[in-house]
Length: 560
Ligand SMILES: C[S@@+](CC[C@H](N)C(=O)[O-])C[C@H]1O[C@@H](n2cnc3c(N)ncnc32)[C@H](O)[C@@H]1O
Image 1 (cartoon, rainbow, N blue to C red):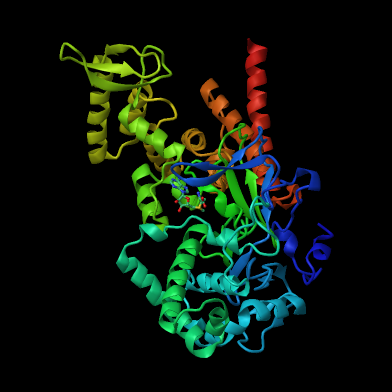
Image 2: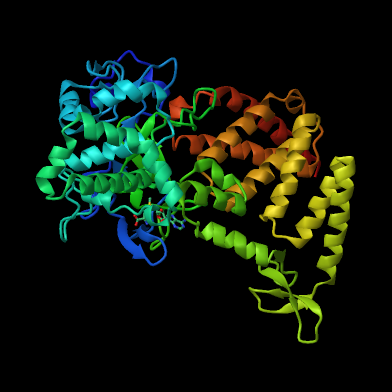
């Protein structure tokens, strides 16, 4: 911790940056890939027929390992945006993205800030001289979620590299000096867009375009290379702008810190800017990812969030919170925002569950569906043991659950919900989504009534178990929800007064205690141990609770 200021010049030693995860252990030289820039040597670049390029694991990778640590190639920092929070006042350099306390301001626009004079000069030479005046004029009307600004930066970066779009033959994927060919080659939704969308994008980027045409020598720069007339040139640049806009939309990384210590809140919305990282942009999306992006001071890092088997594709979730939604809602989002239909294994699994939703009563592990037998009878069929079975029991139980559901819709009584859960436990797998829905309702009911702490714990834990099974243990929104859940339970007055527990309740509390310990370990994935400030008081209360439970158990043992 003490030396992070030395690692990141410009960061004052007095700043309270120890409250955020500026910590970064870089990949050792021996662990770096020889052919993929910024990636670990356990990754390989492959091509799939349906999703373009992908990164896969060359060998089994443990949990919490660094897979990629990348310095962004193009950055767009939201002007005047503090990257850590009100109290800590760290800003980002507009050229390299480093978190800084002290900075140089461009005295042309008075908007862009830089960590060093060399960053300022570099920015001015490569792109800032083209955007400086436009920024002054348009800054205050600039929409944060609009990608036109980062698209403009990408284009200016391309121009500074003379729009050379040919990657080196047989060379490393990515190049310190010039990553433009790799940005240019990123998969986009360019071809999928309809004309009205293209027009809309052109319109929103037009002011930059007009400005470039009228106020800068940007086109002269291009003219040197291209022997075409001005009209063609404008069309060419317009097309490039749309392409870059689409690439920015699909390939950007939102610059934000998982600011766990401040009220456990995430600055999910907006972030502090966007970064284009060509290697990270090779990662495809999954609604149940095996890796996550973490933003450090000036690196964007991808870490594995569970064990990844050899040959498995490395995936991240493009929109974190969306994984908690149903498959149809998620598809609407990926289609509307990213313009592709998600074909990840989790969506396929959920679709498969929709076709074969039942637990096979014969093998108890397979998924079964309702089919028509040769005799014209409706029977169940299991995809695992490949046997059919009479569907009567499932149909009967389902009928009871439906009646309970209808009654519940009138009474809102917990007893009816509990009965539905009992029925669903017979018909569906214990990690199934119908059960998740009922547990969620049961949890919310008990949570709001606040009278039965053991039930709150029980249904909360069941909920998280299903979410983790379907998504991923260290998935940040789940972790955050868990931290909130634990804090709430520990803070419940009735929880601390718990006594006279039966065996089942003791087991529930013991699992809860174990989970709190696990959460500390999981949080350390994002924060160093001594930064989990929430932990000591929770630990104390959990410890007391644990002792009480253990004492009770010892009592039982003594009696036995
Ligand atoms: C950031 S790029 C990922 C790398 C990309 N495959 C490439 O070759 O550059 C995003 C694009 O990959 C494709 N893609 C990523 N995840 C996908 C998924 N789960 N299902 C379908 N297509 C996906 C989409 O075409 C999307 O626009």
